[in-house]
Amino acid sequence: MEVLRLEHVEKTYRANDHAVKAVRDVSFQIHEEEVTAIIGTSGFGKSTLLNLIGGLDQLTRGKIIVKGKEIHQLCRKEMTLFRGRNIGFVFQNYSLMPVLNVYDNVALHRCAGQL
Amino acid sequence: MKVPKSQKNSDHLLKFEASPDQYIETEMEIAAIVSRALVTEEKFLIRGVWKTAPSIIMTNSQMQANFDIRQYKMISMSCLEGADREAVTKQLLTEIQDIPKAVLQDYTKAIETQENYLRQQQMFFTAIAMIVLIMSLLHIMNSMRASILTSRYEFGILRAMGITDSKLYRIIAKEGIWYGALTNVLLLFLFGTILQKMMIYYMQHVVQFLHISASVPRHFVIMIVVFNMVISVLAVLLPTGQMLKNSVVKEIRQ
Image (tube, rainbow over all chains, first blue to last red; front, side, top):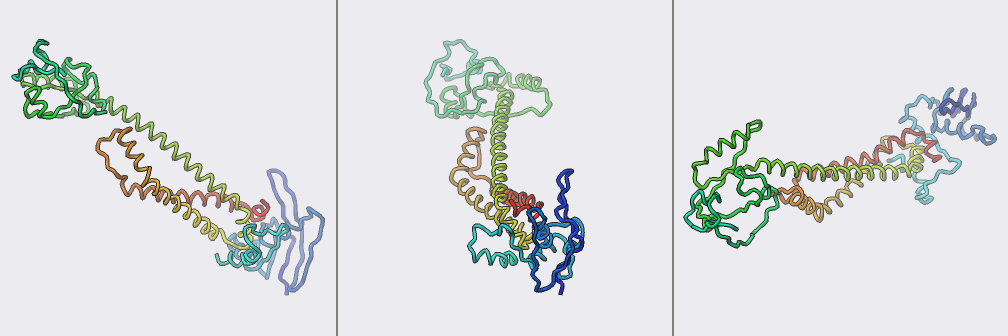
């Protein structure tokens, strides 16, 4: 069963008159129980692509379909709820709460959902 | 103090228009000095007799003992706005000319001077209070803003985990309410111990209110408490709104 599909996904960062294309025309599918590794050199756009799939960033063009739902069509609140219920994300810098211990860091997700 | 020598005082004598040998000097003990400028105003007399002397307020028994005036009375009157004060004064002087032991005193200038002085004092202290208020507001807003913005990384993680904007607002607003409540407790404590005394001192000695209530009206205190709560909540919600404008990725990378 297909859980993720990307169709011609593009992400362009703009600052004043400058535009940088971080992700250019990416398309692939991932099925259930499949392990996929995205590899590339630094600045290749891996983190940007994962941020887009994780619903943390807005794409510029294309489609991202997670479990049959086009996530870029969701409004801000729906996207947040979708992210909370469906996405698990381990950041490059881990993004742990420095004030919490290991148990609380693990349990934080559940607490955040109940808040 | 100079008083008539004879106990059988004529109008002429009481208005200090008789020869100097008709008066004797007596020693009197000062019971109280009134701080209002009214009594030291130099131009309060229509008749140029006691031009530079301060007024002395006497009791009825003193008036009787020193001047043989019984049932001493003072009638206060004020001109309507826009009335010809000079004409009214002249008319009054004419009217009382034949009334024995009657003196006309004009306090209008003195009252104007006094009110102007009070107004200036009030403006000065109100301006100081406003500056202190603005400084406090800026300080509170800035420190709360700094406190929120230094935790943007943690809030970014919570947002990435799926906490909605409204829930985040709720959590932060709760902190603002706590902050407001605790500052209100401190404020009421300081008000009960020091601030109220300071305000009463200000009213008595600076604004020179003669009859002041010993307590600040309750609705005014409630208004300050509510205002403090609103400021505290706004101080945390405004930077939160600013933070939420940024993307989650940007917040986490801070």
